Image (cartoon, rainbow, N blue to C red; front, side, top):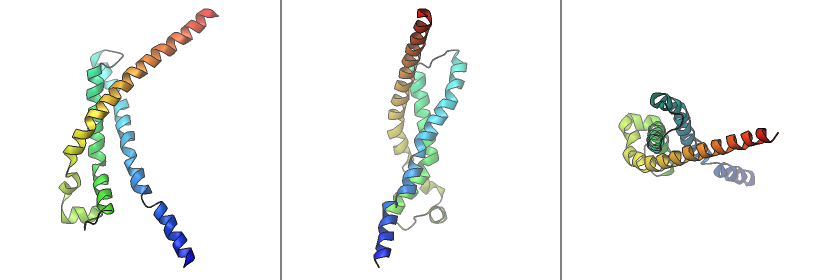
Length: 145
């Protein structure tokens, strides 16, 4: 009986690990899409840096795409945590259809795109400032030699 309680506490300790791991994928998807689309935007605009508007819109778009990809996993996670009947993907698809996996998506996208756009806009500007600083630092070192 004591061994069973130890095993139960161990499994309870890691009960939400898989769900949390899946939730951590969304930022990775968002940043990957951003870094893949960024050069395409730069080549179309003939620039070497994104404007505030470009980086904001690109960041918001990437967040929306990441939300669309990951939202079904969030729906399943919430249902598994709650007391709802359809708790897994096959039951949701069978009983409610694919639309059930995307109920509430517009709210999630609306909430996330503003913050993601701002974050990636600021990231772009900080990255550019750091790049200029580092280039100047190394060019000054070479001049001192």
